[in-house]
Length: 65
Image 1 (cartoon, one colour):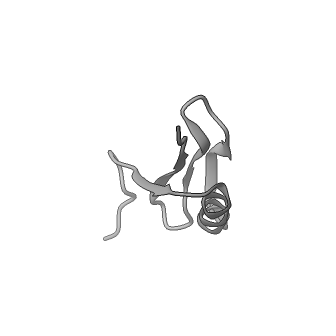
Image 2 (cartoon, rainbow, N blue to C red):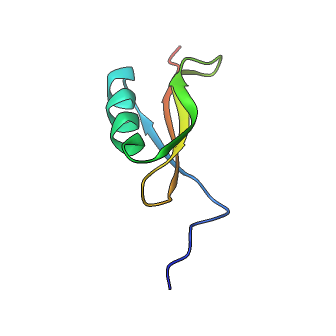
């Protein structure tokens, strides 16, 4: 039988805020957003969610210096 994934998160790192927004929106459809995608001190765009299949994700667009 299928069980909900536990104990990990898949992290997607992208090069643009637009790509982070596209991926986050797609994964959020039918899922649950834990931390909305937004700017942080360490990232231009970062957020956490669980997709409709129960897989936990982090989406990150790192700062460039």
